[in-house]
Length: 444
Image (cartoon, rainbow, N blue to C red; front, side, top):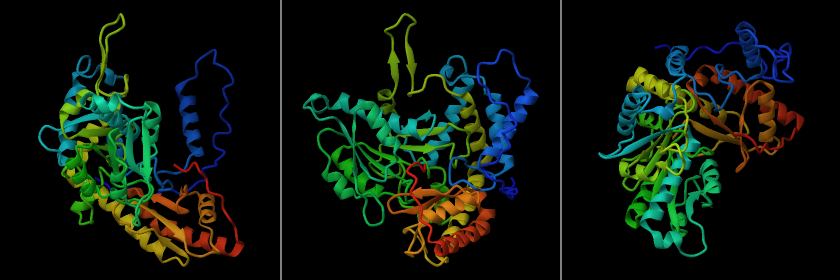
């Protein structure tokens, strides 16, 4: 297995490579040959940031061409099959899902009797976790569910993923966000003070996306177990890095189903599991909870329509790619990918802290996520981000506090020196020019 490739020469993400491709103004009367279409698709890629060259903080998760080929070949073999027909038309998908379930449950220290649902990504996993908790609550606490005018609620730290509020909006559930503590972790005491008889879930992150730190899941789990509350752990970013980072010696706080009181957990296979989009796992401590997730409807002429989660038709290729990549890498391979990502993270944090005027937020190194702020009034950090963008990097931006936020891939390891050189140059430029930046609210 080869290491991440050395990045190719950077080209501007504002390339004019696609200018020669005629625009479509109406539905075409005749078809276009594949050779021309392929040229067009390859030209369009000139508009994008160089993800192979480590220019993106997230969106893509890349280790090597060898691993990418496994992912793409497995997906291609199942690009036509439909996940909706799993177990009926396509028993092969059931077979692969059984293997994926076994690997995931073992990785996250799930107890005997646990269960898993394969979803399309973190957003669907969060949605399904909330929906299942709601259905379970309504079935087991009908008096609380039906009484009064107040809506059901989820108690979460302010750092919880925005997808949680999407789920709340769709299901008319209040998402009550609580300020984080001094280390950017969930304030368990304040969260528990807000619990009432219409609380369906406590929500935590491992790690949270804004700050890259773990919430106090042990403390929340103990309280959830004592008070019979549903505790969800959002490990969509870290689920396939944290187990291996801990094995490599990093100080990873307790976070998975080995923690008493954790009811459900979500982790994206298409992030650092290196599966194809979209692939995520939603794990339940007790597989009996899955009956509260299942959707079933018979009130139409066709018969019974049933799905294990939200989606109906879904790409079977994502299942095949997840199965193949997890088998291809194994524990040894994931230790290698994790070491590359965490080595890059530590080198970047060390290098940023060595640049006068900049400081990385603390704590850090719990995950391959970090942020850095300006401590120099003459250096506006958003202006630094603008300078980096002009050099072909796509920097993430953090609003509270104003910071540059960076997720780290194995592919970033070879470009650490170039990135640090460009950050140092950007700081000097901004300090000299007095440039001020404007925070971009759409920075996900």
